[in-house]
Image 1 (tube, rainbow, N blue to C red):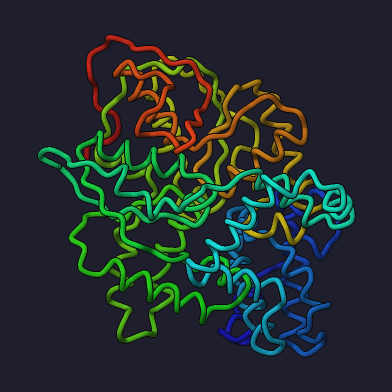
Image 2 (cartoon, one colour):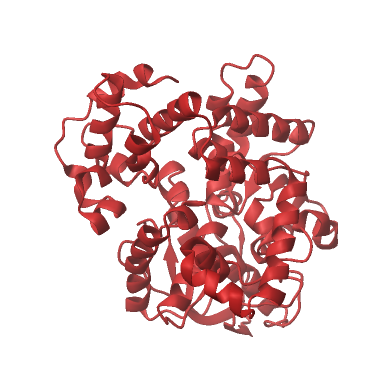
Length: 452
């Protein structure tokens, strides 16, 4: 899509300023080009030839989180996120890929280089971190310093390679799904993925785990639509032939991207029908559980929990009630709603590394709201958010732990069997748990959700 093709969308902005009240970046900078109205004005000037399309004028465009807060609040319905993506795509066509985009896409395009990078990160975390020269470099390089604190460990092997270990035969399965493993779950934290598989199987769902590649969102976010299409085609090939009723993911970002494959490949005669079919089947794990009427757990999880709505999950996919329904179904759990639960945490994929200071400022506001609830657990529905939120809680000294919502449901199911928080099929290889106390509650089995 060229910039001229979105001129009508750009012209819809009447500069009312309604976006100022909701934009996470503007809340921190108070600079006009940090809000949708200002960014759209820059894009309009580029289209009209009053500004060049170059890295300097595009800097505010790349500062956008693509969180869609402004889209939800705009009285004219201006799709600021689509305008920003089109502008980034134009810059990539005229100026080539930015260095960061080249690095990110190169790593995520194929599993092998991604696995190599994660292995090196794990080696660094265990071996090099204490070295004085590295510590000094971290003080100079904010990006390295934050990456250091974000990734304090990595998984030894990918969850993809370990999937057979967690897949079980389901007697008389009522459903069959394909599970899409996102990059973060695959190599940085297995716990959400293991819990997803465990919970599905406990609800009479047979799970298939195709060998997927990155969903393509990082490439899309940088404006590299062709690479995103390439990744989409590869995933469609790997999911082809699976007789499943749904494609389930525990990552809100991956889920929303898979759901957009139909639009991404709409002009591809070979893949558009496949893309449309897959997009219609895509479900977030919490939404799918509610749709099938998941079994209400009897085991108690005695803890207090608040919930952070990932941007892709709550605004792109409109999934907000379902994660809360999952959490509130757990006996003993004290759910506490936080202020601005749907506000961006500042993660936005690699944004938390490319815009360290601004990301941290946005994150600080989120952490303050978490602290106000005094909850012991912060649940969410996106592994990237999980990573950033965990970093933020540690940075600000808030004694809460971050987990995926489905991990708590898996924990309740285990407690029902008297397993508590000990080693079980719903945990990561190293035995990490949420730390919440669990007990077995002898109540009648119920079914939660719509029962559809």
